[in-house]
Amino acid sequence: MYFNKDTQVYLNGQWTKAAEATTGLYTQTMHYGSGVFEGIRSYATDEGTQIFKAEEHFERLKYSAGKMHIDLDLTIDQMVEISYELLDRNQLSDAYIRPLIYTGANMALMPTEEVNIFFCAWKWGRYLGEKLLDVMISSYQRPNPKSCYVEAKVVGHYTNSILATTEAKQKGFDEALLLDMNGYVAEGPGANFFYENKGKIYTCPKGGILSGITRDTILELAQALEIPVEERFFKPEEVKGADGAFFTGTAAEVAGLRSLDGESFKMDWEDTLGHQLSMAYNRLVIGKTYNDFSLV
Ligand code: PMP
Image 1 (cartoon, rainbow, N blue to C red):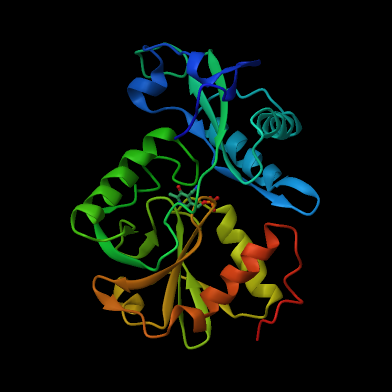
Image 2 (image 1 turned 30 degrees about the vertical axis):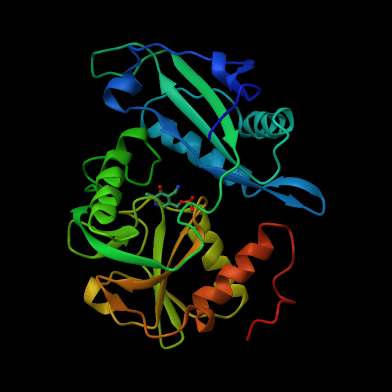
């Protein structure tokens, strides 16, 4: 699914076939999860293939690497260039780009000088699918921001996400919603979270979540469309039975929820602000204006 016999990847300055690329079994990232990564989307637009918010993603990659003491010496421009070449070499247009920065062999708990840079891309549909989601409040919390840099995209943080999604699926839900250590709603395993009630959308403040680029885009779009937004902490009880809710993320884009812990949201998704924002987002990523879109 991720590659075939012709797929090319970038590995430490070389273009190589995915099927032939290899790595060591003693890397610290493999043993301890200390690497960093990104998830980026490109779209076919009237002006050709465009990577959405490429600079923002690579700034975050550099930030994540810095926090983990990983010396990533490529510039943002170089990484943007590699990404476009990657798409070009693989004849991809609507695609998902995955840069992964992983460390060298080291069984001690200190960063390694060896830094490996891997870029791959594949065609990927919406991560959470096209249908409305039945979501459960996870029994897992997001990591305490004092235990790690939760706002950095670190490989090892995703063990928490895997546990939460697996639990949700095993219980017959589509996805999980995780609380923070104080019991406030934080985010999904791979997406930020918004809910709406009485013409206003709410999301939690930054600090205990991965500060999503899609989340920022939604906040920008809401401002442009004069949709009121409040960033504040809220408990799950406030969300249950509200008008609507949605996840945002590069892979998921804007994904509407149908229910939380079995309790349905009040409005039809098509009538919600979340749906308006999702339509505006779908236009924005392909370089179309959203102001002329018939948004009330
Ligand atoms: N939270 C988590 C835990 C994520 O993995 C992601 C996906 N990167 C997001 C939020 C959304 O971030 P973005 O919009 O930048 O993709």
